[in-house]
Length: 197
Image (cartoon, rainbow, N blue to C red; front, side, top):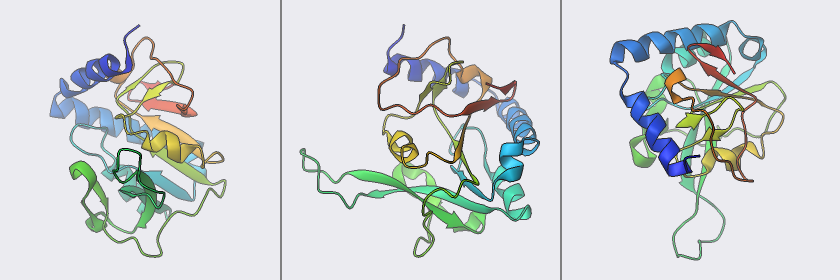
């Protein structure tokens, strides 16, 4: 079995090999499958990443959620209130903040779009009607997920146990088998342009 670094490299290479047309078409198919699903229809709050580079596009999903009267929250990476790490650097944490339109997203951590307005807008724990849509680099059919290596989603998901957790990716990112650590949190389901896992 490949190690985590090799799995990430393989899946990201496959993803970057898709044409813009293929990504756009696959993104529309993913959005259509999501909108038809009860997890989306029943959700009152959507916690969703702002797509960056060649990730599954999420802005169409956000726009539809706003039209459907749902609250939309996006993640922001910021300094943790916890003490500094042993290496002397500030520990980072991921917090979701409510956004009311796409214009409220600004370039943030590592250039990724994130909420620019945060005061009074943080997500305050799962209500049972929350849907989390998460990205990742690689997945398998046992719902194992590899993120980008920061551990932000695994840490966040441990405190969002009652929310429905769906990972979205292109089918080319699904590998035969991924390594897994004790701290890794599997999504409830994975959605690709080919359907649900």
